[in-house]
Image (tube, rainbow, N blue to C red; front, side, top):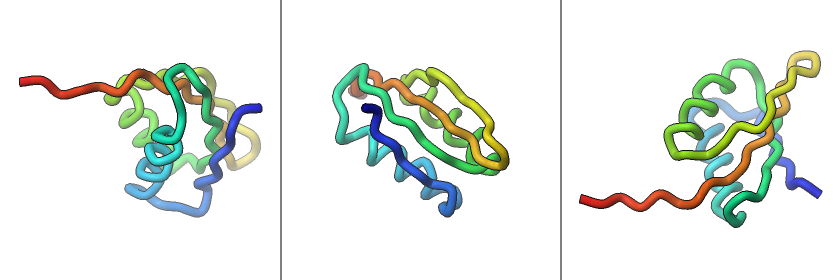
Length: 79
């Protein structure tokens, strides 16, 4: 069963912070389903992609979006 995170009542930047916290508890290739509003959708997707995570699916159901994310390996910064 895919874990689900509802951030429909949150606003940026907390939307991404909560998604990132949810992903931090998971292992590589696990999926997280997120429920969010349109206002947060673009920023959350952009932030997830910049960290290397994969957006598996985004579906709109009424006013709420359901997004499934596949966790990537943690990126390490090297100089």
